[in-house]
Image 1: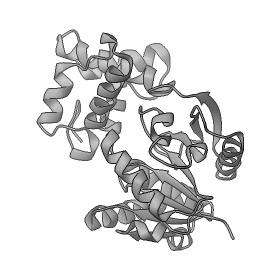
Image 2 (image 1 turned 90 degrees about the vertical axis):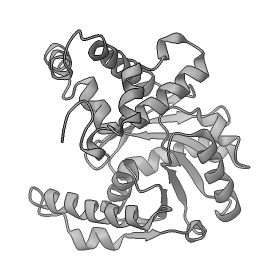
Image 3 (image 1 turned 30 degrees about the vertical axis):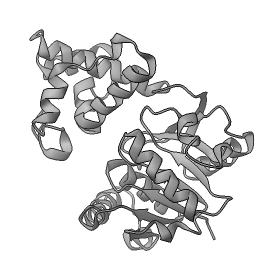
Image 4 (image 1 turned 135 degrees about the vertical axis):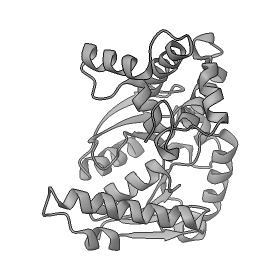
Length: 279
Protein backbone atom coordinates (compact mmCIF):
# COMPACT_ATOMS: atom_id res chain seq x y z
CA UNK A 1 0.00 0.00 0.00
CA UNK A 2 1.30 3.47 -0.88
CA UNK A 3 2.25 5.69 1.99
CA UNK A 4 0.10 8.48 3.41
CA UNK A 5 0.60 12.18 2.71
CA UNK A 6 -0.57 14.90 5.06
CA UNK A 7 -1.34 18.16 3.25
CA UNK A 8 -1.73 21.27 5.38
CA UNK A 9 -3.67 24.14 3.86
CA UNK A 10 -6.54 23.64 1.41
CA UNK A 11 -5.86 26.69 -0.73
CA UNK A 12 -4.84 26.62 -4.39
CA UNK A 13 -1.59 24.73 -3.85
CA UNK A 14 -2.93 22.36 -1.18
CA UNK A 15 -5.77 21.32 -3.48
CA UNK A 16 -3.42 20.73 -6.38
CA UNK A 17 -0.93 18.74 -4.30
CA UNK A 18 -3.73 16.60 -2.84
CA UNK A 19 -5.14 15.84 -6.27
CA UNK A 20 -1.74 14.97 -7.70
CA UNK A 21 -0.85 12.46 -5.00
CA UNK A 22 -4.36 10.98 -4.93
CA UNK A 23 -4.32 10.43 -8.69
CA UNK A 24 -1.21 8.30 -8.25
CA UNK A 25 -2.82 6.16 -5.57
CA UNK A 26 -1.46 7.84 -2.44
CA UNK A 27 -3.70 8.28 0.58
CA UNK A 28 -4.06 11.98 1.38
CA UNK A 29 -5.25 13.73 4.54
CA UNK A 30 -6.02 17.35 3.68
CA UNK A 31 -6.12 19.57 6.77
CA UNK A 32 -7.39 23.12 7.12
CA UNK A 33 -8.84 25.20 9.95
CA UNK A 34 -11.93 26.10 7.91
CA UNK A 35 -14.61 23.55 6.98
CA UNK A 36 -15.96 25.74 4.18
CA UNK A 37 -12.52 25.88 2.56
CA UNK A 38 -12.22 22.11 2.82
CA UNK A 39 -15.63 21.63 1.21
CA UNK A 40 -14.70 24.06 -1.54
CA UNK A 41 -11.42 22.17 -2.07
CA UNK A 42 -13.21 18.85 -2.48
CA UNK A 43 -15.67 20.34 -4.97
CA UNK A 44 -12.90 21.96 -6.99
CA UNK A 45 -10.86 18.76 -7.12
CA UNK A 46 -13.95 16.91 -8.36
CA UNK A 47 -14.50 19.55 -11.06
CA UNK A 48 -10.87 19.33 -12.14
CA UNK A 49 -11.04 15.54 -12.33
CA UNK A 50 -14.30 15.66 -14.28
CA UNK A 51 -12.68 17.98 -16.81
CA UNK A 52 -9.57 15.78 -16.98
CA UNK A 53 -11.69 12.67 -17.52
CA UNK A 54 -13.06 14.21 -20.72
CA UNK A 55 -9.61 13.98 -22.25
CA UNK A 56 -8.28 10.93 -20.43
CA UNK A 57 -10.67 8.00 -19.96
CA UNK A 58 -8.26 6.44 -17.45
CA UNK A 59 -9.14 9.12 -14.89
CA UNK A 60 -11.60 7.58 -12.43
CA UNK A 61 -13.07 10.34 -10.30
CA UNK A 62 -14.46 8.06 -7.58
CA UNK A 63 -11.19 6.16 -7.17
CA UNK A 64 -9.20 9.38 -6.82
CA UNK A 65 -11.63 10.98 -4.37
CA UNK A 66 -11.58 7.85 -2.19
CA UNK A 67 -7.90 8.59 -1.58
CA UNK A 68 -8.60 12.04 -0.11
CA UNK A 69 -9.80 12.57 3.45
CA UNK A 70 -10.39 16.05 4.85
CA UNK A 71 -9.92 17.06 8.47
CA UNK A 72 -9.95 20.04 10.81
CA UNK A 73 -7.60 18.32 13.26
CA UNK A 74 -3.82 18.00 13.16
CA UNK A 75 -4.23 14.90 15.32
CA UNK A 76 -5.22 12.96 12.20
CA UNK A 77 -1.66 13.40 10.92
CA UNK A 78 -0.08 11.23 13.60
CA UNK A 79 0.60 8.30 11.26
CA UNK A 80 1.42 10.06 7.99
CA UNK A 81 4.77 9.43 6.30
CA UNK A 82 5.12 12.86 4.70
CA UNK A 83 3.79 16.34 5.31
CA UNK A 84 3.35 18.96 2.59
CA UNK A 85 2.97 22.35 4.27
CA UNK A 86 1.14 25.02 2.24
CA UNK A 87 0.06 27.60 4.84
CA UNK A 88 0.25 31.39 4.16
CA UNK A 89 3.65 32.95 3.60
CA UNK A 90 3.98 34.20 7.16
CA UNK A 91 6.89 33.12 9.36
CA UNK A 92 4.89 33.14 12.61
CA UNK A 93 2.03 31.11 11.14
CA UNK A 94 4.48 28.55 9.79
CA UNK A 95 6.34 28.38 13.10
CA UNK A 96 3.09 27.57 14.91
CA UNK A 97 2.28 24.88 12.37
CA UNK A 98 5.63 23.14 12.76
CA UNK A 99 5.38 23.29 16.55
CA UNK A 100 2.02 21.51 16.33
CA UNK A 101 3.41 18.92 13.96
CA UNK A 102 6.31 18.17 16.29
CA UNK A 103 3.84 17.19 18.99
CA UNK A 104 1.90 14.86 16.69
CA UNK A 105 3.92 13.42 13.80
CA UNK A 106 5.98 10.26 14.10
CA UNK A 107 9.75 10.75 14.14
CA UNK A 108 10.23 9.21 10.67
CA UNK A 109 7.89 11.73 9.03
CA UNK A 110 9.51 14.08 6.49
CA UNK A 111 8.31 17.68 6.20
CA UNK A 112 8.07 19.13 2.69
CA UNK A 113 7.75 22.91 2.83
CA UNK A 114 5.90 24.19 -0.23
CA UNK A 115 6.86 27.75 0.62
CA UNK A 116 7.35 30.61 -1.81
CA UNK A 117 10.28 32.45 -0.29
CA UNK A 118 11.00 31.62 3.37
CA UNK A 119 14.38 29.85 3.74
CA UNK A 120 14.12 26.12 4.40
CA UNK A 121 16.84 26.19 7.06
CA UNK A 122 14.78 28.72 9.01
CA UNK A 123 11.70 26.48 8.82
CA UNK A 124 13.80 23.52 9.88
CA UNK A 125 14.92 25.42 12.96
CA UNK A 126 11.30 25.34 14.19
CA UNK A 127 11.57 21.55 14.51
CA UNK A 128 13.68 18.88 16.21
CA UNK A 129 14.18 17.11 12.88
CA UNK A 130 16.00 19.72 10.82
CA UNK A 131 17.56 16.92 8.74
CA UNK A 132 14.08 15.84 7.63
CA UNK A 133 12.89 19.27 6.48
CA UNK A 134 13.15 19.98 2.76
CA UNK A 135 11.70 22.52 0.39
CA UNK A 136 9.51 21.26 -2.43
CA UNK A 137 8.28 24.14 -4.54
CA UNK A 138 5.51 22.63 -6.64
CA UNK A 139 4.48 24.50 -9.76
CA UNK A 140 0.91 25.72 -10.24
CA UNK A 141 -1.35 24.03 -11.33
CA UNK A 142 0.20 21.01 -9.60
CA UNK A 143 -1.87 18.29 -11.37
CA UNK A 144 -0.59 19.54 -14.75
CA UNK A 145 2.98 20.61 -13.98
CA UNK A 146 5.56 17.84 -14.04
CA UNK A 147 8.38 19.73 -12.34
CA UNK A 148 9.28 20.88 -8.83
CA UNK A 149 12.12 22.94 -7.44
CA UNK A 150 13.61 21.05 -4.48
CA UNK A 151 15.56 23.04 -1.90
CA UNK A 152 17.98 21.45 0.53
CA UNK A 153 18.39 23.32 3.78
CA UNK A 154 21.82 23.64 5.32
CA UNK A 155 21.20 20.50 7.41
CA UNK A 156 18.79 18.55 5.18
CA UNK A 157 20.20 15.02 4.99
CA UNK A 158 21.19 13.24 1.78
CA UNK A 159 18.79 10.48 2.75
CA UNK A 160 15.90 12.95 2.88
CA UNK A 161 16.82 14.33 -0.55
CA UNK A 162 16.94 10.82 -2.03
CA UNK A 163 13.63 9.79 -0.45
CA UNK A 164 11.82 12.89 -1.69
CA UNK A 165 13.39 12.60 -5.13
CA UNK A 166 12.06 9.05 -5.37
CA UNK A 167 8.62 10.10 -4.07
CA UNK A 168 8.27 12.88 -6.63
CA UNK A 169 9.47 10.65 -9.45
CA UNK A 170 6.73 8.20 -8.46
CA UNK A 171 4.08 10.86 -9.16
CA UNK A 172 5.65 11.90 -12.44
CA UNK A 173 7.47 15.01 -11.27
CA UNK A 174 11.06 15.75 -12.27
CA UNK A 175 13.21 17.98 -10.05
CA UNK A 176 16.22 20.23 -9.74
CA UNK A 177 17.85 20.21 -6.29
CA UNK A 178 19.29 23.57 -5.28
CA UNK A 179 20.80 25.08 -2.15
CA UNK A 180 18.82 27.15 0.33
CA UNK A 181 18.31 30.83 -0.40
CA UNK A 182 15.28 33.06 0.21
CA UNK A 183 13.04 32.86 -2.85
CA UNK A 184 15.19 30.03 -4.21
CA UNK A 185 15.63 30.34 -8.01
CA UNK A 186 12.12 30.49 -9.47
CA UNK A 187 10.54 32.98 -7.09
CA UNK A 188 13.59 35.14 -6.67
CA UNK A 189 13.47 35.74 -10.41
CA UNK A 190 9.73 35.60 -11.07
CA UNK A 191 8.81 38.07 -8.32
CA UNK A 192 11.19 40.62 -9.79
CA UNK A 193 9.36 40.23 -13.13
CA UNK A 194 5.92 40.55 -11.52
CA UNK A 195 6.89 43.50 -9.35
CA UNK A 196 8.53 45.38 -12.20
CA UNK A 197 5.51 44.70 -14.41
CA UNK A 198 3.30 46.20 -11.69
CA UNK A 199 5.54 49.27 -11.64
CA UNK A 200 5.06 49.64 -15.43
CA UNK A 201 1.28 49.72 -14.90
CA UNK A 202 1.67 52.05 -11.92
CA UNK A 203 3.78 54.44 -14.03
CA UNK A 204 1.22 54.28 -16.87
CA UNK A 205 3.85 52.97 -19.29
CA UNK A 206 1.59 50.17 -20.56
CA UNK A 207 -1.60 48.25 -19.73
CA UNK A 208 -1.45 44.81 -18.10
CA UNK A 209 -2.56 43.21 -21.38
CA UNK A 210 0.15 45.00 -23.34
CA UNK A 211 2.84 43.97 -20.85
CA UNK A 212 1.76 40.34 -20.85
CA UNK A 213 1.44 40.23 -24.65
CA UNK A 214 4.95 41.64 -25.07
CA UNK A 215 6.31 39.14 -22.58
CA UNK A 216 4.57 36.17 -24.24
CA UNK A 217 5.28 37.13 -27.84
CA UNK A 218 8.86 38.23 -27.23
CA UNK A 219 9.97 35.40 -24.97
CA UNK A 220 7.55 32.59 -25.80
CA UNK A 221 6.13 32.25 -22.30
CA UNK A 222 2.60 30.86 -21.97
CA UNK A 223 1.65 33.48 -19.38
CA UNK A 224 2.78 37.03 -18.79
CA UNK A 225 4.00 38.27 -15.38
CA UNK A 226 0.72 39.94 -14.42
CA UNK A 227 -1.40 36.96 -15.49
CA UNK A 228 0.92 34.89 -13.32
CA UNK A 229 0.55 37.29 -10.40
CA UNK A 230 -3.24 37.04 -10.64
CA UNK A 231 -3.01 33.24 -10.70
CA UNK A 232 -0.75 33.10 -7.64
CA UNK A 233 -2.73 35.73 -5.75
CA UNK A 234 -1.55 39.32 -5.32
CA UNK A 235 -1.56 38.95 -1.54
CA UNK A 236 0.84 36.02 -1.81
CA UNK A 237 3.05 37.96 -4.23
CA UNK A 238 3.15 40.91 -1.86
CA UNK A 239 3.96 38.71 1.16
CA UNK A 240 6.78 37.07 -0.79
CA UNK A 241 8.24 40.41 -1.86
CA UNK A 242 8.24 41.55 1.76
CA UNK A 243 10.12 38.41 2.80
CA UNK A 244 12.66 38.87 0.00
CA UNK A 245 13.13 42.50 1.01
CA UNK A 246 13.66 41.55 4.66
CA UNK A 247 15.98 38.65 3.89
CA UNK A 248 18.27 40.47 1.46
CA UNK A 249 17.77 44.07 2.61
CA UNK A 250 17.96 45.00 -1.06
CA UNK A 251 15.80 47.77 -2.52
CA UNK A 252 15.24 45.84 -5.75
CA UNK A 253 12.60 43.82 -3.86
CA UNK A 254 10.69 46.93 -2.73
CA UNK A 255 7.03 46.17 -3.47
CA UNK A 256 5.22 48.36 -5.99
CA UNK A 257 2.71 50.70 -4.27
CA UNK A 258 0.05 49.56 -6.75
CA UNK A 259 0.34 45.99 -5.44
CA UNK A 260 -0.22 47.19 -1.88
CA UNK A 261 -3.21 49.29 -2.99
CA UNK A 262 -4.81 46.39 -4.86
CA UNK A 263 -4.34 43.97 -1.96
CA UNK A 264 -5.85 46.46 0.48
CA UNK A 265 -8.83 46.79 -1.89
CA UNK A 266 -9.32 43.02 -1.97
CA UNK A 267 -8.28 42.78 -5.63
CA UNK A 268 -6.26 39.60 -5.16
CA UNK A 269 -6.50 38.05 -8.63
CA UNK A 270 -8.34 34.98 -9.87
CA UNK A 271 -9.46 33.76 -6.45
CA UNK A 272 -11.42 37.00 -5.87
CA UNK A 273 -12.52 37.54 -9.47
CA UNK A 274 -10.47 40.70 -9.92
CA UNK A 275 -6.80 41.60 -9.99
CA UNK A 276 -4.93 43.04 -12.94
CA UNK A 277 -7.73 41.39 -14.94
CA UNK A 278 -11.38 40.57 -14.24
CA UNK A 279 -12.50 36.92 -14.09
